[in-house]
Amino acid sequence: MGQLSRRGVLSLTAGAGAALLTSVAMAQQGRHDMHVRRDAGCGCCLAWVERMRSSGRFIIGVTNDADMDAVKEAHGVPADLASCHTATVAGFVVEGHVPLDDIVRLIEMRPSGVRGIAVPGMPIGSPGMERSGMGRQAFEVIAFSGDGDRSVFARYPALG
Image 1 (spheres, rainbow, N blue to C red):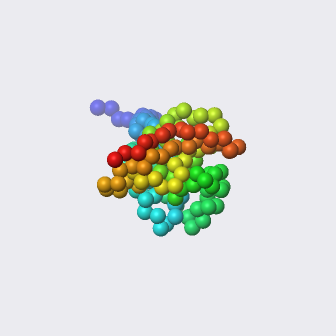
Image 2 (image 1 turned 60 degrees about the vertical axis):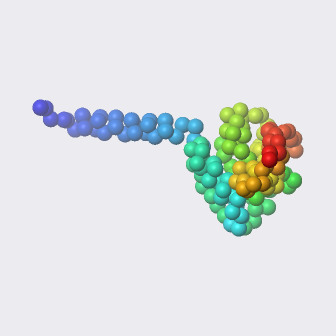
Image 3 (image 1 turned 135 degrees about the horizontal axis):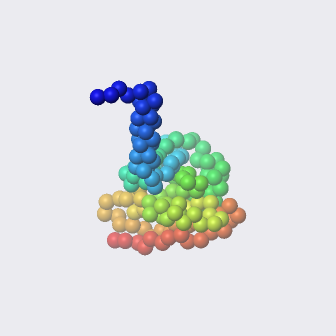
């Protein structure tokens, strides 16, 4: 059996490294970095974060922030669309208890002029706000722009 030359060892090492990077990239395909800012006293935010994390679609970082009004203002969230947490992902703002499928659709569609989507308030039954025996309040996901335009991105009817 022949000996590997130094060049052969380097080639094998480089090839193995490239294969590893390719497999990591393929495993993370479709995953996005998401940063969530929340008030430390709000437990429903963590329930929403866990729903997003368990989907496998996001790599999530969470920061507790005492001045959530300033966070929302900095990200252009209209005051009447505010909720308890603010996330950024793929260049968009996600305000409140937005369902996973709507976030994925926003990222895939990349609608022109849309800064973000929001579920105003904290509707019972929205992701992270589920309560046993309480059903779901009707709620809308609102798309908003930087210049004040808005549209309904999704509607969820009341259940049970």
